[in-house]
Length: 237
Image (cartoon, rainbow, N blue to C red; front, side, top):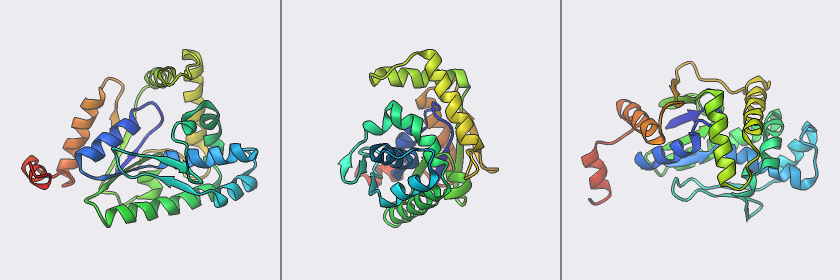
């Protein structure tokens, strides 16, 4: 198993999916699960700062996230909301929602269940989030913490938002990144931090392909990546 943590704008999701495909492994985006709860909170009219009410919404919500790196999905109560959970409203609400201890307890338990289910049927799984190596799966064979400068991460986030038709400008993107960093790193429940035995990879000056090569080499050294001839044999090539 690979635990991939780090703040937004480091390329985490793209890297996690591509690495999972390279390892012929499953994939889990734990951040999407918190975003699903945040969306459920917003749809219910609940104040994201009301911890007790947020916990009640989380208990009642039916969350479903895909574990295929090529076809991930995110469903709330049976509805595909993959695009909606990436919108500005959910992005603003997800940090206070994910800071609620009971929400984290519920989702960590579900994440561990999904991981165990995937590992029972595949060679491995790449799990991305902000507390995977420290809380969800502290025994992961490889723990990686992706990072990048705040300026680079804000630029990437702004470009993503613009491409998705929700661009708000460079200053707003930087403010959003700074706000999320502060909330995620200072929350009482499972604050974002690198595990003591995590490999820290700064992606500021690296392309996605370069990051994948670096992580592939790390996975190979940990015995998580089969040699090319074995991979070819597995896929009939």
